[in-house]
Image 1: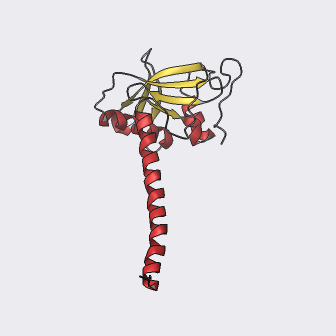
Image 2: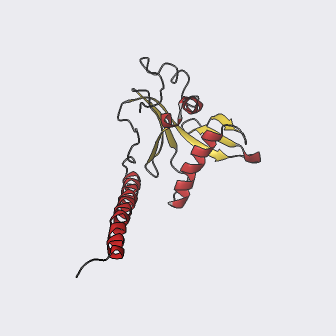
Image 3: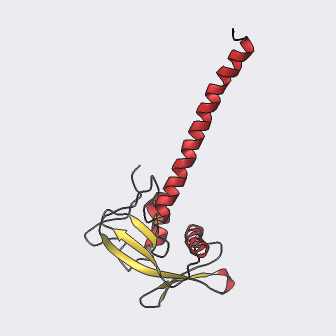
Length: 171
């Protein structure tokens, strides 16, 4: 039996369709895999989470205050170290809201503080030990690094134990 031109066209269209569906399926599988890795203590693919030693850090609590302000407190001393007013520090507000939202979704309360840490290689991380989330703040640009760096103990961001300075990751 000979194939008609219509049969050949249908066969020729199937191959690209299957290729596109395969690529979409692989992308979806990789996205799910990286999300599952992140939830089990690993880092999402492509993230620059460092293993360098911590040279400065602070345990932080974030609390909603009257008027829409967010208070940032040193967990050890209870001292308020900063206040984020509505309409200001939007990057910080967004990061905090995202981490708190993850806790709520997981049914986790406010018992554990968040950890801000400066590492020997200059990376600044914001971590949530309750969910395992770790954010390399340098991935969001140097201006956003400095917003969070001001929350470190005095002098840590400028000259972090041996001259390490903050930077955005290469790449």
